[in-house]
Length: 290
Image 1: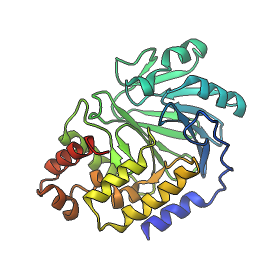
Image 2: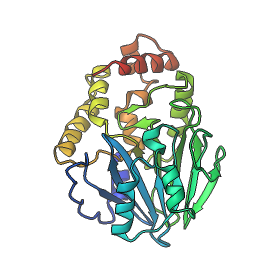
Image 3: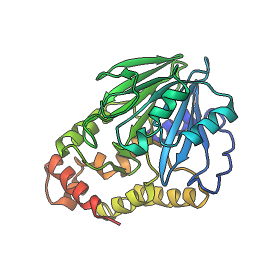
Image 4: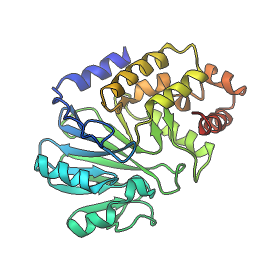
């Protein structure tokens, strides 16, 4: 019932027909709408996603991550959109590589990040800082694990629509990012924080890796029918070059093993009831899963 209600909240407004995917893009460009906000999903590189979020009452627009400025600039020009902000999740080049070029081409744009390793930042965000974008509020959530300076962005819609969570390389559909500079304890704390957010939040991760994540999830919980159903859905999406993000936060709690480390079935896979040790074991196994 929770999943059904959350889907209905996001299905009340029409979604435009997806644009055709260019031969060199891994997915089609798709708009996801709710009351007061539209999120444009933009594919880049091998499997990255960038996002444009627009406050519908005011037209104010921000980018999430800068993987490929050429694609971003082409979309902005085609859609006649003006960028006000760019929010960078972390310092890895496939998420932050376009900051210097953007700063040169559009010096009026506020480039926001929380890691000094990211170039051309003109607004250093602080833990739990809130930034207004039109009628929307962007909450800057410090999520150190994949990198020590990683931030996720939780966006509340001023018009009353459900929120969105942009997770970079922290959380993916059916999985999570590697603990490159962090620990299982940190990832567990992040999961607990995400679980406290509204269940109807949509989750937008930074990569298209859902099928592999769900295949791993099936090895963890082979009897979990939610995982199998979502994997079938994801495979159909990818056959049509459609992106698999977003998912609903309440759905991730049904099929994402990294959000289920307190669940007995996931703990059975790792052979331990400690959720932090379970998190450690899951990530270790996922690191070598192909």
